[in-house]
Length: 334
Image (cartoon, rainbow, N blue to C red; front, top):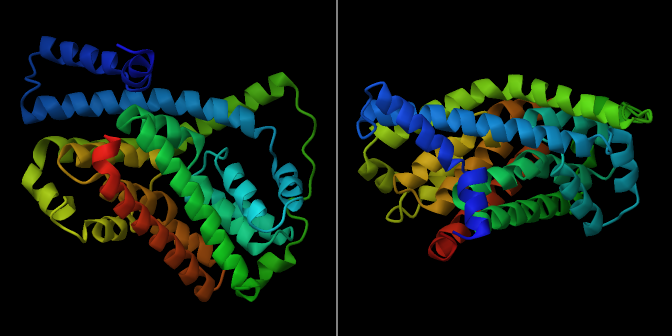
């Protein structure tokens, strides 16, 4: 076994944990080949695996994030112009382990501080869609090539979306209270010691875990039902290669839901195992994390309907294109 295969299967994928849970359930008399036993194993394994990865990743990412408080991020973004500024904003979004709703207050703060509208939208798109945690978790499920391409294409959507919005000059579509709230992120963060950063990372980890854990349970529960109770033929008919509208259907289905990458991955894993196409599954994940209905309702408080519709349209178009691209490349990637 190569070192990368070992890392993907045993470190990130934690297959040893799945085997240990299976032995424990068999000792209790559960038949793992049956629907009930398989569902219980899937649920326990994915909840424990995602929780461990979540806590480790959020702690590490939050420690990195402690070096980029809002004011410092604003100063960094203010040094760049044009598409370079959109790219830096998208990259900064990757070190913010937030769901879409949590990213919107920072978007409002950056916008009110005078940053270009397109730059702040690049951050808003990137933050929930392609954080560093998603890269590691996607590697644990889909492998390195899929994870890396997913993140790169997510960054492309963020940069392209922000650039389009910038060129359309829609600053008038920002709600007046945002434009008038100057100085909302103009406070310099005090100097933090290493101990301060470790405490900050710990608090972020526990706070994020408390907020995300219910969605992990829901997502893994849905995944367990899909994995063990829904016939393969149903998934293949709706989301398989024989349905050319599968990507559109998955994108539309993801919008009413609300979860972050940690809650959507077990659902995606189960769908893929049942015969759904890779790009269709990833489009569903992107739609849930970026265009969830609760986040759109919250964003509507900061922007007017025309700008909100443009944001949804740009993101949805990018997500659909990515889905069809992954479907075309599926046999090369997995």
